[in-house]
Image (cartoon, rainbow, N blue to C red; front, side, top):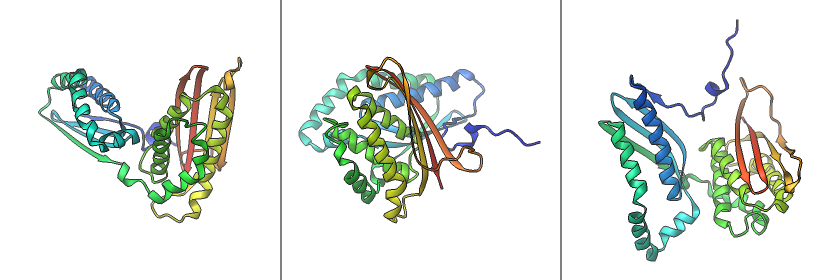
Length: 273
């Protein structure tokens, strides 16, 4: 008899904390600590793309990957705004008090943080290639959001380099779709179609060693397109995406987006070699 496979155990990007504790309340406090920590750094313009929590003998080891937003890096490059940033830290002291409050609840002997910044690992050649192919959508979809456009391209490059999960890519895609006007929904689908062609076909011609070959990608977008009364479904497929995920390396992710015209659902399948 063959053993049934679980999709959560087969995927490497699924977050599984390793908690060795008898008290269930301490386990809940550790998970609460992760949510608070992710909320605090998100307010500062920093995204926590991956995290791993290990707890053993009242000692906590927290490992993760950071990604700084583009507007955050330009903000700190200007020396005149550093003093204003330090003044805002004292005004927003509620976040720090909340952080230390959770630390008191944990009652641990040691907390070790180990983080790596992914901005330095972005392939510049691939980033320039994506920007050259998709720059015509800056004035339509990403109007007055040029920093979000740069962050999205960096996340796509990191996804092709196997440095981020598919969830991080889909969350950034949902953020760019959330604030666009309903008249630009068809333009957004054309943007995704061009993006998928570049990811599957265009990168193979560059012959980059750090870029892993992508064999196929599939996206299903459902909701009330262009403000219509009845919801519809749009499907975009580039390359080949197999149905079975036991032998083939297929990743899946989904997210919900709430806009002024209604709720939308995004599902993505990514097939890697």
